[in-house]
Length: 73
Image (cartoon, rainbow, N blue to C red; front, side, top):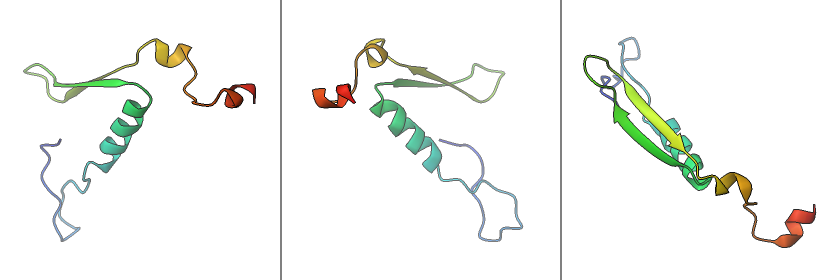
């Protein structure tokens, strides 16, 4: 998901050490909450990405539990 150069074994050299784990975790949690993600590149001559997160209204209006007893707590 990146165009940054890979990190080197010698940590004195500049580079990108991330492996995308944070993005994976965020995406997974968002999708489990009912969200849909849209990813796109920004139009030229701009650089970078555009990330849009969309939740359906019912994700906020309806309880997400499975047991009616949990609602009483």
